[in-house]
Amino acid sequence: GAGVSQSPSNKVTEKGKDVELRCDPISGHTALYWYRQSLGQGLEFLIYFQGNSAPDKSGLPSDRFSAERTGGSVSTLTIQRTQQEDSAVYLCASSPRTSGSSYNEQFFGPGTRLTVL
Amino acid sequence: GQNIDQPTEMTATEGAIVQINCTYQTSGFNGLFWYQQHAGEAPTFLSYNVLDGLEEKGRFSSFLSRSKGYSYLLLKELQMKDSASYLCAVNHRGSTLGRLYFGRGTQLTVWP
Image (cartoon, rainbow over all chains, first blue to last red; front, side):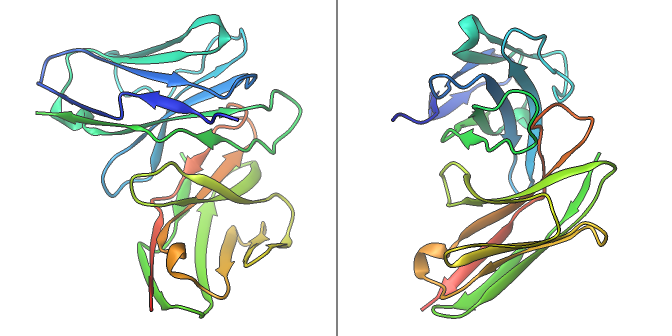
């Protein structure tokens, strides 16, 4: 079956512009995560969605970042007034696990490479 | 936050064995994952440890010692295609379910 897909695969934008990154999780997966991977850094957690619960936004680096998940499926990460330090690969992951288990294998998408000039 | 430490780079030759170490400091440890990431691709799941001991899966094995805050990934019979970044990630109790804290990754280069 299809894996996690993300679009666009690459995005080049000018400083100050807004960008939207899209994630299509694996069908039926209830949990969805956004991570950021900067050059030479580990994956940095941004935000987590689980079913209809309020998202965990504790990883968002500033109020310029926001995300939504419509209908419990597709998610969009929006970065407003982009800065050069926002340049990174943005990875989305989904998981079929809900509660009661710590074994929560996450399936990652290929990422969106964002470059802010 | 979580302190997760792993070597930045390692090299090995085809057919050899390599061990990639990962140390962590966390309160309420709730599982450790290893992922493999080829350049420009998505991370893919390799292994999961929550209890002490060795988990073997083909050419790859992963070990965990909770008392020492230590794990390693063992790769046997190395192949060229094993050249990739290996990511250690920890989940801790009390955090968002499934939220993972990642190390910076170990870039493994396998030479012929």
